[in-house]
Amino acid sequence: MPLVLETCPAPNCNLTPRDVESLLDHLAAYHAHFAPAFARAKHAYWAAQYLRGLLSTCERNSIEPMALHLDLPIRPLQHFIGQSTWATAPLIAQHQALVGTTLGEPDGAFLVDECGVVKQGHDSLGVAPQYSGSVGKVANSQVGVFLGYASRKGYTLLDGQLCVPDAWFADDHADKRTATGMPATLTAQSKPEFALRLLQQAVARRCLPARWLAADAWYGNSPTLSRRGRRAGALVHDRHLDRYAGVAPPASGRRSALSGAPGANRRGAS
Image (tube, rainbow, N blue to C red; front, side, top):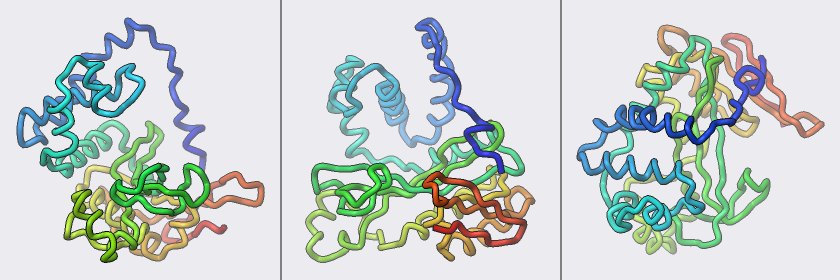
């Protein structure tokens, strides 16, 4: 199976200031796809301003510096990100529909992986000493599981879920759960279970054609994902999700792909 980097190389970033300015209308049109997914027009407005801030030349991507850089009032933007209530599911559904339209191919692949963000403090939801792939060791961090999609046309993220360690469900973390607004309905789950749920939700939307499910060795060795994942994707756009790829590091330390035959369960070996 050819590597994604060979079939979908990153574009050369040689844009001039005039080129960037010409993209503003395209950015506005892209955001317009998501505006109806917000229940209130003001939420759609502040989402557009937040997107502008993330794409700006502001050195820090926290709220206050972005608002000052864009000459916006700080408090409304802080409230939109931190306190206002708006559903993410309609936005994710619209995003995945766009991905299906622009990148979808019958033999596309769902990709599963995790990513850790090292944290200095201890008060952010889900932060704990745990393995973080970004530094290759156990560190005080938050870890999320992510679902991606790849085809010959390109690749992108589809969805993600913050993983909350078991320690956060203990009685001694009750105050932290309250302070971070952790939903009372949240239950402890393994990372493969999170990945499976993201896959099930994407498949249920029936907008992403796919033939492959790919993951690294840690997820590939999980029956939750390798077996139940295939059953979850039993039919994707009238095609069986019946090919499984495990990616494992060989002796050299570099990763290579192991492709499974139709209906087979080839797992990555560590």
